[in-house]
Each structure stands twice: as C-alpha cells, then as structure tokens.
Image (tube, rainbow, N blue to C red):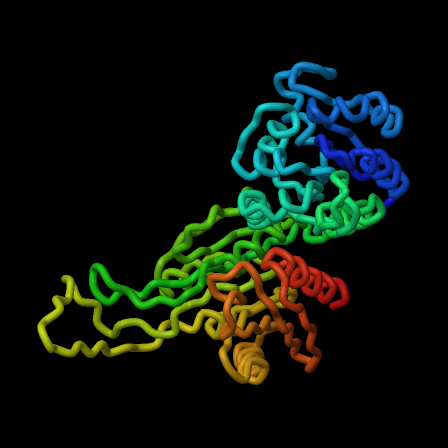
Length: 403
C-alpha cells in the first residue's frame, strides 16, 4: 500500500476467538493501517479494552456515552474517518443486528451511520449456529449489500466439536483487508454508468412481456464501483432491490425508456456496464384496454424488435470511453457473445450461461467469461454476484490502466 496510513475501524464482538483480534490489530498496523477499535459490552468481559488500546495506540470505544468529543455524534465522526470497517470476530448476534438494522450499542449504531465504505465481516461461532437458517439468511442480506463475508475456518471449536465456525487466521483477515483497501479508490473520479434489471414491454394495461432478470448482477456492479470511489448512475428496470447508497438512480420500465436514459447519460460517462436484460421484442400494438379471455379463442400478438441500445451507442462513443456489455446465453455461449462483441463495437463482453439452476437470472450466484476484442478470455468461476462484480471491475481497471 501507499506510505499514507489507511484508516480502519475494527469492531470486536464477544466470541471466544477474540484473542485473535489482538493479533489482527498488530498485523493491520504492520501493513500500514491506523486502527481504531470498537468493542461490544460483552467483548469487554473477555478482553480488557486497555489491551486493544495498548496495541493500537488509539482509545477504544466501548459504548455510546464514552470517548472523546461529543458522544452523541461519535459514531458519525468515526464513519467519516474510516476507509474500511472490519468486524472480527462477528458473532451471530452482531450479524443479526447489522442485517436487521438494530442499533442498541456503539458498534451497531456506527454501522448504520456508515457512508458506503467497504465492510469486511469474519463470522465466528459454533458450527450449528453458523448453519442455522436465521444466521445464513442474515449473512445473505449482508452479502447482498456488497459486504465481504469471510468463510469461517474448520477446526476444533471452543465447545470441543471439530466443525466449521472458527475465526479465520489474523493473517488471512489482514490480507483480505489490504486487498479491499487497495481496490478502494482505483475508480476515484470516474463517471460510471450501469444498467440493471429487466424491461417490461406492455401488451395491454395489465400484461407485459419481460424476462427473468432480477437486477442483482447490475446492482452488484454499481455497488462495487461505488466502493472503489466512482460516481455512479444506475439505470434500473423494474426491480425490488434496494439501490446502493450513493448511486444516482434512474428508474425506467420499457426498452425505449432505457434507451433514452442511456443516451442522456452516456456522453459524460467514462465506463458503461450494460448489465440490464433488455427485452428483445415488444407488442407491435399495445391494446388500450384489457384483452378478455374468450372461451376457446386463441390470441395472437404481433411482435416487433425493441431498440438495440448498445448498437445505437457505437457511433456516439468517444475516445477514452469503455463499454462493457453482458451476453446472457443458453447455448453456444462464447460464440454468440463474441458476435455481440464484434457487432456492437464493445471493449468487453461478459458472457454467462443462464440455462442452469441458481446461476444467472434470479439467482445469487453467477459465472462469467470475459471476452476481449483481441481474442483473449478471462474466466470468472461460479461465485456470488458481488464477487463476480469485484472480479469484473478488477479486469476493467487493469485494462484501463494498461490502455
């Protein structure tokens, strides 16, 4: 990392592996971080705050009503200072509070006051607790917010069981923290435009043509760009997802509306990631009233193509702009994706096979093949959509810096 110290908040909750958090403080400092520690009340019963104060060289915050300055806003001031929030060990209790927005101590209140900095969570608990549906649901909520969730290690637990649930080794947590900090800022000042979700093409006032896209991949791409310092405009088709904090969101419904929004914002962006699944066809004539179902009668709907948004940008693209498209395919994935890359003059196409269960449309996981104009390919194996977004931006950033 650079010579400037990186600002890290370490949240410590009451897991028996709390002793590893002491080692984690020193490792983070050795890697060039300034560390401020926040402890839950129960954590102070396992390790005295003075231990973390001596290790970090900073006062330790233990509740909302102690610490320097105005205690009523200390959690907000810390949020302004930090570049990364780590919680290690993260107990089932703290994970649940983060997921559900419960703010009953300094750590949970501080989390809600966060300003979009990356969050790294290292769960540590009994194996059965870790696998409990409630804990898994809460971890999924946090993962969907773009937080990095470390997989617990397997080994002998405090209860004597040999199971998953151990806090990862401090070196592992510290290395992941540094990787996050090094990514943060590599899109500083870059205007990014992302499209996400499906479009809906009306047939009559109550029916429409659409597809199975949930918008999760596009939202993950937008969230990752924000965490790297980009200014993000997210053009979203209908989706029930919570927009990433800090993004300018433009809501659209039809392909024509999405085309107009993209054309409006494209001239000022440096990078466009077109992750939306735009409907390829729309009704040639939209009925003014609901079509009634008649006994035994067939209903034929004439279709016409929707606008090809990416193809329409080919002549508008300026030097220095980078355009990435997505190709959701069910067969001949790479061949069809490469045709799209060449036909539409893209800088990159991210191809994904959406024929499998749980990967691609509607699922929480994805797998991508990145195809470049020079014939090179990069494979992003199956992982969460947040992790796919991270790997995608790694590739884009590397290409832009090398261009």
